[in-house]
Amino acid sequence: MTFYDALVIGSGFGGTMAAHTLIHAGQRVLMLERGGWVRRGFHNWSEDQVGLLSEHYLTESPYLVYDERGRSTIGAFSCVGGPSVFYGGVALRFREEDFESNPDLDGNSGAAWPYAYGDLEPYYAAAERIIGVAGETGKDPTEPRRSGPYGGAPGQLSEISSRITDAARRLGFRPFRLPLAINYGAASARSACVACGTCDGFACAIGAKNDLATSVLPNLVDGGLELRPYTVAVRILAERGRVTGVICADPRNGERTIYRARCVVLAAGALGSPHLILASGIHRCNPGGHVVGRYLMRHLNRIVFGVFPGAFESRFQKQIGIHDLYFGDPEAGEPRGKLGGIQQVGTPPGSLVRQQLAGPLGAVCAPLARHLTGLLTIAEDQPQFDNRVVLDSSHSDRFGLPRLSVSHRYTRRDRTASNVLMRAARAVLRKAGAWAFYQHQIRTFSHAVGTVRMGRDPRTSALDQYGRFRGLDNLFVLDGSFMPRSSGVNPSLTIAANALRGTAALVGNTPRHQRSRHVLIAG
Image (tube, rainbow, N blue to C red; front, top):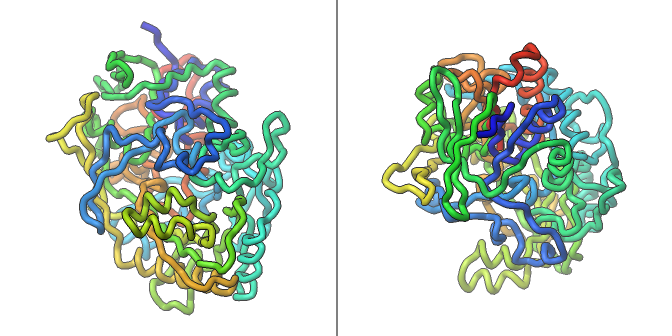
């Protein structure tokens, strides 16, 4: 039996950043990933390779979801690099005020960040360097303070992006360039972005998007990381206040193995991590264990698509952000306080339109997709105790994991905030020349956070300020589930920065002869 210094479960932002710190500290690290590597090539430019239609979006162990639409099932991305392979590359920091208490949003949830923006800022800067984020400073009206500039400049604006920028300015907004994890030439050894129309939702055919499987993990493997794909974590074993092992299964043949390490980091995602914790029963070791699976947040993400008279070129369009209403709209009256952000999205592929609009409607609308361009509104949703994941023990998958049941409802405040942002987005598109509009609510859990939250009070939070799972001194949870609140921007960069902070404290604050006693699980 091989023993490792650290065992990392999952290869998403949390797991990869944790492994980055541990490998550079000279530790022997094993990373487990449920999926395999995503093959890259010209086939990635095909419409049927968009995320939800690709073979890496797995539904063999579906989650059961109860929300405003009733009952449905969803799958999850399983691949090396996690959802970063298919994301749009937006890498925004949370605003400084996002880390402060906010009675309008917090309600009676007890949500409380155990650290301030300044504590995370150096790790934001490190994450941007490691991933490779291109952007410009001084244009976003809500931009938090920075210790340095971005490592590269963003690419040239598309024609429709320029039109939206001009329209927003004529309405009194201050649009800015979204910071993007895309190689525009800074990484000279790799292909530079060619501004294709298949980026957001697609794996990059030429490896120009700085997803983790392209920009980070290959170097870690070269540096000694042992990455084991096609490995499903089934149970976490614990005894006397410590994790003692992780039971895993090979999805190709069902073979079971127990991996052991002195330190474990868990980051399987805001659905996957509580699923594994609850299935293992280790929440009972935690004084705040009753919140595991609770306070699920996912943003209220809605898109306004404008219908334009001319068809758009197949070109990258996710370039512009609008944050003028982030902290509120005095003219709206309701709701008070923070609302969220607005971001440009590209023309959707016809295949995705057909999938989202089933039946004759999808067939009719798919050919019209080239006349659409949109703005995504991201409303920060309130943390609610009843938004949760629980085990459905009446059904188990072939690995023996009980099915996960997900319950989620938005509050009246969430919907009101979203409506304010939607009106602003529609006005910008109208000013840019749109003739008609179509609204679409995103119902995936791509921005899911909050189910194993950190906090100051051990009775109301499962993690301490470094992500340590209370009650098990060698288990850390370092994915999006750690967040007490969701903010109004994409969570990926904050997940990465928090993982760097947690593992830096683990490695730097532990005496050298004790550093290998901890187990990290991340994904």
